[in-house]
Length: 263
Ligand SMILES: C[S@@+](CC[C@H](N)C(=O)[O-])C[C@H]1O[C@@H](n2cnc3c(N)ncnc32)[C@H](O)[C@@H]1O
Image: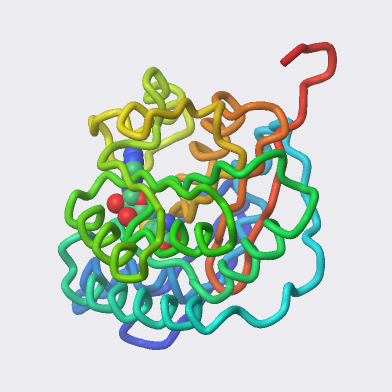
């Protein structure tokens, strides 16, 4: 069995990925679970050979237009404020499932997407929105921005941050796993950090998963297959899925019709 090692500086533990998508986190006795989370953020792991790839979902890979240029001063200030708060949340260690995206990189992706003809409409939703930073950036890029987050503490902080910057982002405290989707998510394997049993986030937003034009997620490696399966099952044709995978690695995919199917 081939194992690819990803080493990052101590005291962060080592990660090993097998071609089957198995993630081994080797934690020494002095390493806290918090460090495991931080490790995910700092390690660029492509997971290209993982099980998510082999499920052969009808998603077409999209290429974004070139760099959309510098962001506005407001966006830069918002990114600084959000990154600072994210660092505090990670340090406090109360929500171990939370690891922030690279906000500046996410901003470039969202602005490139917003200025392109790749999206079918304006409705954006961040699955597992954490501090809501990426949702806020989507709002600044011109999307109607929504976020769904299972950890109430993060939802409160996301709403405060959005208010401070007068963003119109809307957040629901609940699950992005659509009603009836738990079984599908479970069938994709154990997802250590995927919250189960939370309220239906879409009901609070007054949206259906099929209404979403763009979905953004930063899944833990063991959640990738579940996120893809849920998107494939519940998003509408033409919807776009943006996923962040650490480092500067994003993927942008569009749901396409299965041959011979309508809708
Ligand atoms: C890796 S963090 C990413 C946070 C944020 N999207 C970002 O990129 O900065 C994953 C987030 O998903 C949330 N989460 C986990 N399971 C969830 C669920 N079923 N519904 C909504 N949020 C969930 C966690 O609480 C955590 O904040």
